[in-house]
Image 1 (cartoon, each protein chain N blue to C red):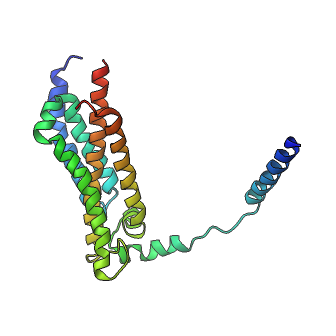
Image 2: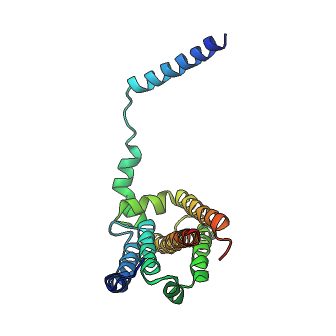
Image 3: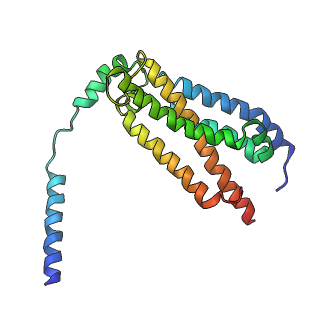
Amino acid sequence: MNRVFYGTVLLLFSFLLLVSLVVEREPIEQSKGYVLEQGTQETGAVNLVTALYLAYRAYDTLGETIVLIGAVTGVLVLVGKHT
Amino acid sequence: MKKTNILDVVSRKLSPFILLFGIYLVTFGHISPGGGFQGGVALASGLLLILLAQGPAVLVQYFPLGRIAKAEVAGYGLFLLAGLAGFLLGAGFLSPLFPPPGTIFILNIVIGAKVGAGITLICWYLFHEMEEQE
């Protein structure tokens, strides 16, 4: 009974995966075109990578700094006892 | 491990240029390829060259460990402040305060200092642990 259940679930998932692989959709290019056209004008950064990660997605960058500070804290807790 | 003259001279001459290149990467992050994270890692590599080739005493003499740790924390605090400052203008969190390149420039410098200090601290403590085990 268990085997039948798991088999059915796996079949269902594999079917969903197959559909998502076979059915092709147009890639969403709206945001790409917007950044390419308006990015430098809106943020003042010629380097569009910087324009993305410090202007459009600065919130994401804040999260990355939290990750780094977490890494430093972890190293200090595990290793930095004696110094 | 024996310290040779080559290592001594090369590290002393090279590390200032690596630090300068890191500062260049950070401050020109909005114009040319580079930015806070890459420039910060370049800064950290300059500091680590001093640490590995000259020893911890020389690094502490110029960049005390307490100040590096403070730079790490201050970077995070300044980023949060820059985000909260957007509320002063009646705009959202992390909305630009200064005319266009200004906010990105400041955030790049903050992130550069923070990443450089963070990587240096991590490597410092890991090397210290490695030396203790030997």
